[in-house]
Image 1: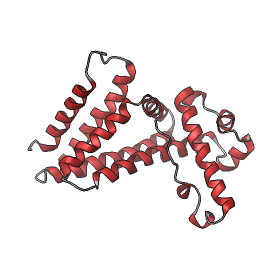
Image 2: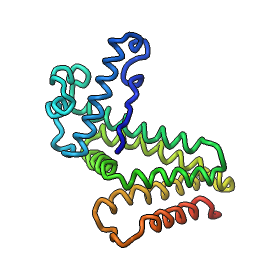
Image 3: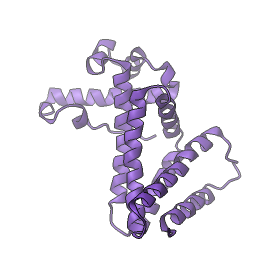
Image 4: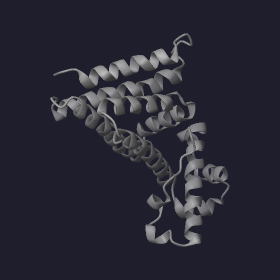
Length: 216
């Protein structure tokens, strides 16, 4: 997973970002979140503690607790900010120039690249596992997926305007389910090494294209 640039504006009010001291504070917050994400994907959510997060970020425990007083607050912020950045990138592609079908192809290619990234898979699988046990993670993941699915639903509706809003949404759910399913399958090692990556990508594009263009 590439290093994510956490939006300090989302962590501190804009009027508190005007001084050098506050900008440094924003940078420190972003560093804590980035290193906490790495800790979660490496050691798993069950082993995640504030003390370990502080050590990972190289800050005193008291400093970390000043910003994130509980494990829940820190994990919720990490999940929300990370998934938001993914979705922000997807929105940019979905709203870029060109036809809707081309934009959908670009979006699928982007996501397939991320699905193949080991660190991304580990993080997303940890989030999904945590969401089975903690309400705050369930809520953060649900909010992310609502936005994520909406991106695809809008593109499907643009490609296939004769579909009802409900049908466009259902097809978007199926597209997202296919992509998210690859996270699990690729991580399990059940995909044969003999399967050509380009062939797999092509097959995914064929399925997505079929879902987006087929009539009622």
